[in-house]
Image (cartoon, rainbow, N blue to C red; front, side, top):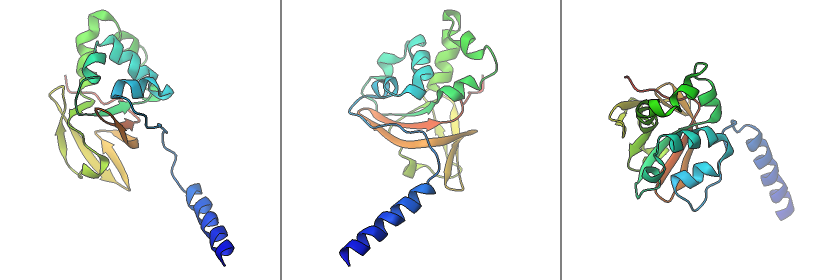
Length: 166
């Protein structure tokens, strides 16, 4: 009987896991937000932008911070030449504005998000939250991995770069 139950549970796990939607995978580590991003290949463009914006020390600070982290694919989807232009030293102020628009003071877990909620960012603008079909949207970006805890906050991976009104 025990063996039959074990086989049944394993079969149910395999069936259930085959229906799990594809999301980005980040392995939680004992690290701050920057170190976590540095160790995550699909966030390497974000890391380069944070370095270019001289925000490393800020995001290594005590926090807590909530970061909505765009993937490399999200940055690649920007209009041609946009990222390269933003990374130029003369555009540092604009880059910092965009990056800090992705950061919220405090630690906001996905369970804290409410449909229709607006949240003030470090940049000063507001982002909007929409919950639909079991997914969280931040402005026009979908959260693809949520609640990745770091020593100084939490990271939610998103599939688009969200842009503040400038």
